[in-house]
Image (cartoon, rainbow, N blue to C red):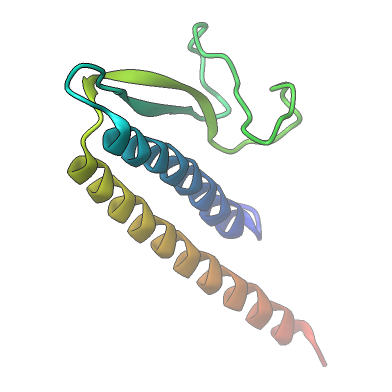
Length: 126
């Protein structure tokens, strides 16, 4: 494990949870806009690690890059697919709370990693 892997892993987790929050926010809006005659489908985010061997996965970068492998070893959003069920506001609000808690947990791990790196640097100072 490299010196800053903890920071990279925590940042990767925060990125995944940000994408989950984006999808859940879209689903909340869809649930409120749907009618019995026109229900909106619930969207589900799909993710893959850098070492994924699934040939059906196409890299999708929400930041607008071309999806080429630029050496980033983190988890990538591979697509957003319909989940089959209609979007439900209660289910989506629970998903938002889950993603928020997971984001906060990853942020806490990132802070611990940052403090660990700072203390490691302090040990090396005269």
